[in-house]
Length: 169
Image (tube, rainbow, N blue to C red):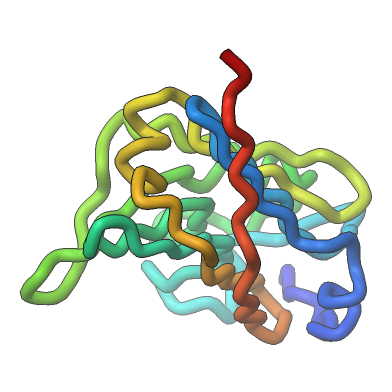
């Protein structure tokens, strides 16, 4: 039986800093995640269709609320699995969600969201493409809310400052 190991939230808060840099064509957020040799998903203790991992960034732009990042839900037909951070990311979904006025949210298709392991317990969450970046950052929000929720760990919520890098013309 595969079970998740518990990791303390304090170790992530002390990890490399959260960073957020947005340019005209790229939004790049570096987030700390556990520095594990092996990750577990579709764990037996996770209820079917429940989220096991979600590493998301939330911003409000021109009155619209967005969340983007990585989500891994337990699919009922999948057996418990072990693998690398890259394997976990490949098994999940990289998405941009837009909140609806009456409640709920919907996925924005072809939004240029990418999640990439960059080593030493860090991931890069990015949005690529001018139109995609403008959709989420055109009003230049000053802050983003990061939520890191991982199987077997305490959830972390952290407000981070967004730095804007203007293009040189």
